[in-house]
Length: 329
Image (cartoon, rainbow, N blue to C red; front, side, top):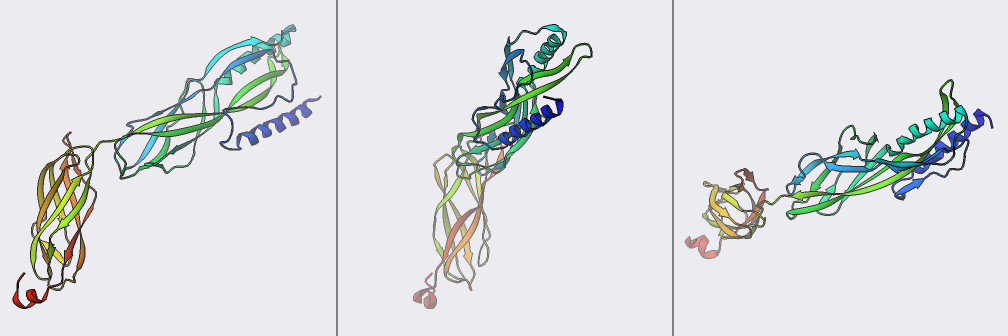
């Protein structure tokens, strides 16, 4: 078999390997390309493989309702476990070929063409598609961290949640040295590649924090009059809120001259009431109106936080007969 024939066969084998590797993520944990072509002696069988480990760069703690970028660093901790002789070399050229083979076989621990995908279940949504990480030699890190955008549901409870990182890559499975010339120190090589798949669980934490919801609104208004409206608020979070101030922002046709209520400290699951003097415009229509509310509070660590925007329903009632003619309001 001449060199041109060998070259065509090698190209075919390489393209076959690439086609198999691109088949997707249904690959087994380890896929070995069949050694259908042996052009030379195989002097050594080597043992080892890449081993990709993932770690989060920076904090793994986030707030509910937050959209964040998760930076994940990949490191190859692959180890060369050893080798055993397959065939004994004879003559200078074969000895040179055997020495060259064992050197080149050391790349069995290097990972090539890494592709990583991140997935998770509710309440964590992964927004990013698969990421390419290039090649990583044993003992080295990826050139730069992978970046995955995640969104945490605003109703997520505090605690730890798992994300699954799937990684696939190619690695050098075997090498045979051909046409070795010891005096000129030249050679050609045949390479066989395999594909590996690994997965790792990465934990992220949702912080404990105060959270609020409006339970009910007591009181009602009549067009052209004002009255006290009481809004009942519950801390549905896992952390105490301190020095709480509930700020309302009514819009036409209702208004107020005092938009703040001081509620002091609110423990988890505690229910409190905020009272406001609200006025309805004389031309307001009888129906429920929505009034915006935001709570400003201090965390146990001393940080100032603001709640998400809450909606408090306020009813404007139609003036009755006696109220209209006798002013009994």
